[in-house]
Image (cartoon, rainbow over all chains, first blue to last red; front, side):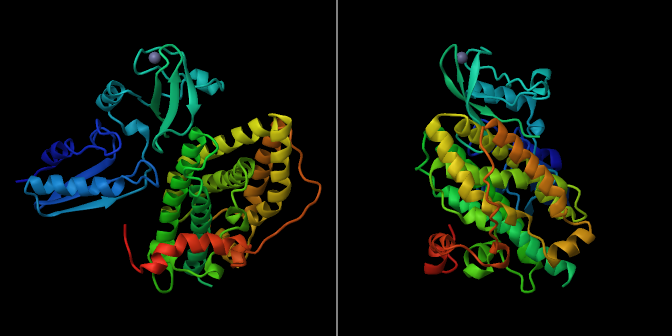
Length: 161
Length: 252
Ligand SMILES: [Zn+2]
């Protein structure tokens, strides 16, 4: 018997190909799982419209389901409502930081409202003395920062709302 | 003309603007002036090609004889593309690339914002997704226009020249014909009239901060929306369509 919570557990084992420490559940791109009469229907959403990883993710889900001997399934892609970094799990944010990528910051903080640059703490030494190098980092969802204290260059997972 | 035909054409324009500008920017892959900009411009290219996929997929479904987004992207003739002439202009130097991008982003952002209220739910959904990306694009291109304009004497002069040569193509972004009139009446798309003042204000604000001045001439070029393109378009398509034409139906 397949049930929805079991499928969610299986999906925890499917990792994002570009940020391999995050499962697709941590990343918040699995929007829904439905099981009706042993038929599984999964809906995923892309982080960015041009996300080149979507095909791979779909294939990885297929492989995982087959490993679990699940044969009746369908995978849909939906773009609306649009993905937001708010859907990333708290556990995912901690995993990201441990991996060396600064997790998305709550950009609705006062300093940002007053037009001050966003403070992104360094994932290595926690210093707040960092600078934005480029709005665009190694992939579409990241910006490029550098820590002024420990000099470490790092990726920041951009807040997308 | 039916509503479906009009929406097919409108989506084709949105898709072609994204596709052709994305193709132009992707030509800079490995050729950006600095590493960060190489990455930034190709990221923008990727977003635009992603947006093109969504617009063309929808447009293709509404065509009289349904087509896939790949067929629309790679197997049309030059006169069947309806992008604005602005986006097919060559990359030129970095100032040209950035100014072209800025003129486009400053139009695309308010357009997508208004499309959020479209009576067509699917179009509103595509706009919602694309807007998040376009906001970053506009921030990036405006910051560079300001930095180059208010930079050195050399950078100021060069981007001022970019403005003189590219502004004439921007007015076509506000082109309207019976396609738009029908869709505006249906509450599916906003009027050019409602976008233009927002574009103009962004333009004036950024140019002022960049210490650049609007060209004195008021030349306006158009034709792309009706399939009449500049001489640069054919070369761009030859490169873009090469694989699909040489190996029909190939897939990556
Ligand atoms: Zn540090």
